[in-house]
Length: 219
Image (tube, rainbow, N blue to C red; front, top):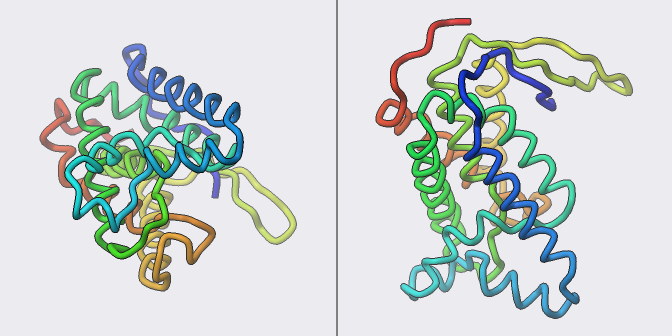
């Protein structure tokens, strides 16, 4: 399922979400201009390598830097789509600076969770999806009854439907959990960090009440 829009209206300009999208786009643009050898070194330097993380304080910086690295166009665009749809609403709920702080906190927790599950791996963990999963968790907490316009594949056909956020995000979370349980490493299922998604989502739900202004009205 692919989300297209949410029916929760925002009251302010989501400049933090926009800035995060631009920052991710800029870093990816830099990646595209690196040679294959330099790109590999860049990813190894700034991506989270679990085997190093728990033995080197210096490597802890990658818990944040890895959030701005992506493995390809599909990886980047899918992450930025989710960030745009759900991040704008959560930023409006939290306020700009609280949202920025929240984004990095849940992103760090998500990366830590994934790194812990594959603690012996030297393969780099990259992508904004752990932090974005935290944003999804916050959206789930505040707007469970909102409607998400979604593209749904049915066999060879694709249909568009409005589905409740609690169903869309709940199903998304269940898929991350099952995929995490049945994969042994970050690269077992096409390089997807399932545990980062699951941990980020749960962190978002648990931390949302500390950042939001109030429970939003059902819409």
